[in-house]
Amino acid sequence: MWARLDTPLPGREDAGEPVRALAYTDLVGTPEVGDALVLNVSALARGLGTGGFALVVALPEALPADPAPGPGHLVKDRYSPTQTMVLGIDDQESEHHGVLARARSIEEMPVVVADLHSALPAVLAGLRAEAPDARVVYVMTDGAALPLPFSRAVAGLKEAGWLTGTITVGQAWGGDHEAVTVHSALLAAKHVLGADVVVVSQGPGNLGTGTPFGFSGMVVGDHLNAVGALEGVPVALPRMSNADLRGRHAGISHHTLTAVGRGALVTCRVPLPDFSTLADAERAQCAADPVEIVDLVRAQKAALAHHAFAEIDLTGLWEALGASPVTLSTMGRGLTEDPASFLAAAATGRYVATLLGD
Image (tube, rainbow, N blue to C red; front, side):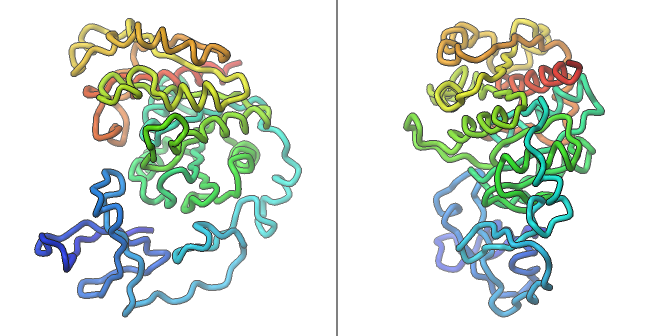
């Protein structure tokens, strides 16, 4: 669904150096050597990490053929030049419409809601360490990247058999199935895809302004509320770090303290990693010992006191994370550089596995 290319960019001081570009081939066609390109370079020009690509808007001299008429009337990325029409799993023309027209509950299915896309492989590593046959569906929301094909992690997790399926909601597109809302995606995951567990997060990338409520992960609270409204088990994955130099993300990130502490109106399960259960050899591999943030986390828990905590033993999870079929990376940091981040996600996966036996 996408092609990666290197292309010169006239007008730049380093015009002789090619830039990385992405073309979503279903939308713009497949570029060939020598094709003229219309590029969007706004994120590239600002030096953004996740968005540091030029994006192919069009191949003006090699336009793709018009798509064949087909079912579906869901328009994603609406009213932008690259809007695309898809068949939603909840669409009137979908074979699953009848099931979803009747569905009202996800019947106590556990749903992990994460702030960052980078948590997904770590959650699955922790879950599979206890329940390797669990059917897991990933629901990608539209708080960050809209095209799911942008995620190399999802592609690798699907190839490894770690995901049963994917659903993209809101303005996001490109999943195995499309849905209008998180609510209909959760119902579809349960009643169409037969999920045991769902993981919900925005796509790659994350928007923040350094203000209390001005960040894209604020919708974590809304998504946890949706789980509660549909009679599921809302599990809030705590975004944690013992390496982020920004004080607001140290220990439990202010994103979690705000989105879950203020935004989640239902009682959620909040698994917390017990860093003291790491083996000495594992702690020795860490650039900074995560045990050092224990006192900070203990104080931060007050902002989440109306939720239900679970302390999770980490024994064996370091090895489980090492078996991930995709690279573990958050904000450019790996497991040994920011162990708290990935251990919190893996601990959440381990906790969810215990719910499957209830």
